[in-house]
Length: 83
Image (cartoon, rainbow, N blue to C red; front, side, top):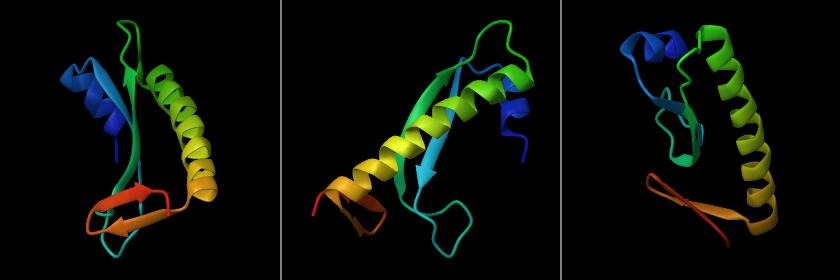
């Protein structure tokens, strides 16, 4: 629930965002795309969260566009682009 705060408290140097396919579980679907977001020395929860959201929006738009253009299939936990 507080991933950004926990990442800062733990002292990570990189965090990020993940787009995954929804399934019957909680955060258990196949990973579609991921992007890294570096943690800056002066980051607080608000600044880091905003950078993650900006990255996430771009990644989501690019990924959905690619899925629409190329199609996709899922086998097990793997999503592949293309028909």
